[in-house]
Structures are given as structure tokens and as C-alpha cells.
Image (cartoon, rainbow, N blue to C red; front, side, top):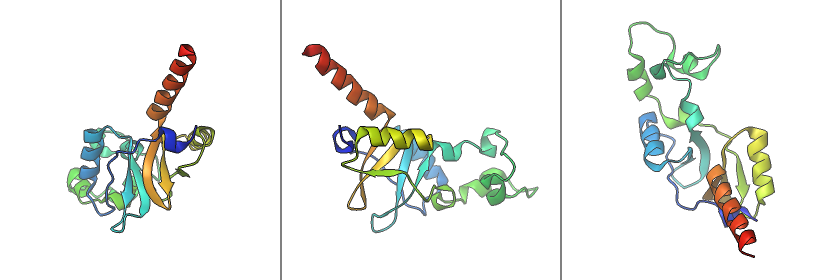
Amino acid sequence: MLAMNVMRTSFATIKPDAQLLDAVRLLLETGQRSLPVLDGTGSLVGVISEGDFLHRRELGVRCPEGCWPEWLLGSEEGKLVRERTRALRVDAVMSRKPVWVEERATVDEIVGKMDSRQISQVLVLRDARVVGIVGRLQLLVALEQSLAGSAAA
């Protein structure tokens, strides 16, 4: 089975200069685990995922020493963290090296990348353009279809 056979083809994307609040809202609205970040020409420049939002002061979660929010937000007293966070953009926190596969990649290759990088989904590219997403849900759907086909035979 190939990525093109199991990938989700309807998905939201976001631009690098979008506000973080917009990215959070888009993740919530779509139920996606991450958003491909595309520049003005539609080229993939990064990905922003649920995990990029976990260590946030707004949640009352302490950042490990050397954590990027500490560096970005600073520990300046007297300013509301929320105000500083609203000023941040997607390109400040996105992963600049998103994990992806070509549309003809096998499910075995996809699972291998997901396991080795400890991620829940990968982007699918055709001619350097994002055409799909394969996540755990898509793999479960493919498994269900395979098992149902075997049971019917």
C-alpha cells in the first residue's frame, strides 16, 4: 500500500507570518494534528504541530531549561505573557525541517519515519508540493479496510 492510497487529501495549511492564535484555532477547527506551513508560492517551508504548543506559560507548564519559549518570550517582569505571545508568528515556532514522503512511498516507509522521529503523521509531497497527510488515523482506516477485505474473502 502506498501513501497516495491512504493519505488525507483535504487539509488546512497556514502561512509563516500568521499569528500563533490563528494556528491554534485552525488546529482546533480542523481536528488536524499539524498544519503544513506554505509560503506565498505554495512551497513547503515548515510544519507547526500540537507539540509546538505544549510548553506554554499560558498553560502553566514550566519550560525545561533552554526551552525556546523562554528565549523568545524572555523572563521580563511587568509584561503580560499573553500580550507577548499574541505578537509571535508561526515562523517563530514551526519546525523548519518537516518530515515528508513522496506519494509513492510505502506504508512501511511511512511507519518507519513516524517511529524513528516519534511523530504521529507525515506530509505527502508530489513535485515538491504538499498533496496529502498520512497520520495514525489514516493508517487505522487502511488497516480496517484490509482486515474487512480479508474477512469477506
